[in-house]
Amino acid sequence: MKTIFKHVLKLVVVLLLLGTTDSFAQETEKKNYDQGFRLGFGVSGGLPLQDPYNFNLGGDVRIQYDLSTRYSLTFTTGFNNFFVSGDNNDLGYIPVKGGFKAFVLKDKLYLLAEAGAAFAVTNGYNKTSLLLSPGIGYATDKIDISLRYEHYNDFPILNSNDTPGTGLGQIALRIAYGFKL
Image (cartoon, rainbow, N blue to C red; front, side, top):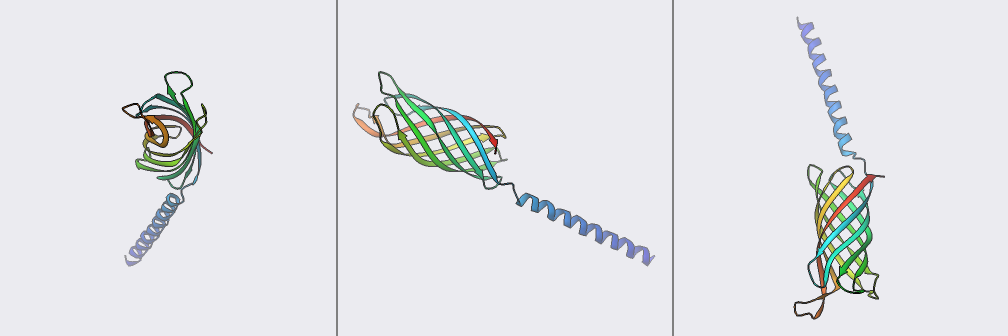
């Protein structure tokens, strides 16, 4: 009887050790997340919050480096245009932003903070503006939809009494298609 008990005890110990080894392998696999790049192409539309602009429309390219399943670094550029009623008053610009993306809910819902510059390129206006852009979004393997606020520190606006000023803000929606490189 003692011999059978010893063999059963040895079998249990061996099975526990194998189970523990298996558990460590799974944890290591999770920690060694496959870091890599993603590329996304997006279109965005925005609603400027100051006069004289009516709406914003543009396209962008974003490269994202995944640090882990929850955190990523981003770099975004493209071309956007603030449309104004009238002749030759539009303001086209090239945004160049770097940012940090943190997934907060089930690796789908994220918060994004970007900062950079907006280079005006149309209608003889050639000023460069600081660009700050916090946002929230939802991403799957292929689709990325985000809502963000953007502030252009040095872009011209019209104050309530039609006097010129600076400091343009907008609410923008971005819809993008992305894939892993």
